[in-house]
Length: 208
Length: 266
Image (cartoon, one colour):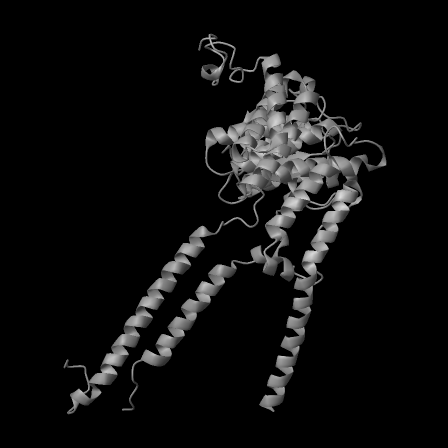
């Protein structure tokens, strides 16, 4: 009797482990397929990297320890879905896009704080800076300075974490140029003694 | 040997049993004291209020939308609940700018007099004239949240915000609001929202930004304002205390079973 019960339990466990193995083995392929879809038509995807494993509770994701990778991909997709300057928030999809834009701002800011990998963090900080910069370009004078400072801070941190990040470097350059134009204190190395933390590195002869 | 003890001629043979009993008694005694201390500490950690709107251990700030186009019972229900449960909270009113009316830590009952300005009166159901009449303009939730955040940061400690609004915001406000939510998360301030008859798409938009757990009621009119804890089984009872109390009872029962006084027939 005990042998029969043990046999049944072992069979059930073997089947469960087999199913789990299949789930784990197909996960990398699913991720690659979603990656390909993202590169092909990012705005057509509705919930990418959502069905990487078919078992409930996402055991494959946990066993492969790809949760962070997928979260990073989802955050990047969210940005691409509502990218400022490229995606027009209008038409039938307006409410959805507005919601996604708000969600993207929060998600990317949060992930950029929590991400431990410096290169990924630099990418997320760059995206965060792009959002802040878009707010700077759109909103009234009251908020402008705050948003520009936030954008500069994000780009600067991104460059510090990944000096090879070309987008972040270019964005920082643009943001600093905008700061120079708007006369934000602390961002203009050439502007004299009272203007800036970078005055020491300014043009030779420009003084402190 | 004391006078009350049973006289024995072979006390040495009973020594191992005495040592064992002593050890069991010491272990049980320590376990009982530990369980009692644990029960005390767990009980101290609980809030005596059931599912308060302002989360336990936080300084609350009510952020009230003065541009709300509708009066709804939920507004009164929320403020009355705060007053009834003796919660302490500050008050910020906002329209397109935020204004701190009451500082954090104000007793909830102080919020009740504000209600008379927000409640329609007379046959025509018009809102009474209030001191902030000229203040009412568009809805910038971000402005109200920012004012509340600044007050909470000034106060120090953990903060929470209870936003009461119809959530009727323009598209450009979505980005400001999202940016403000990021700031609040950075400061560790939680946001709870009492929506006043919002349209489903507005509700979905706010839900995407703040998360579904922040909404204290469903969108439809007449639905109850309930803290998230009220909806979860986890907060329905003090489970941790119940487990510790059960452990205490089990230890006492074990003590009675193993170490009870030997009863002899006379």
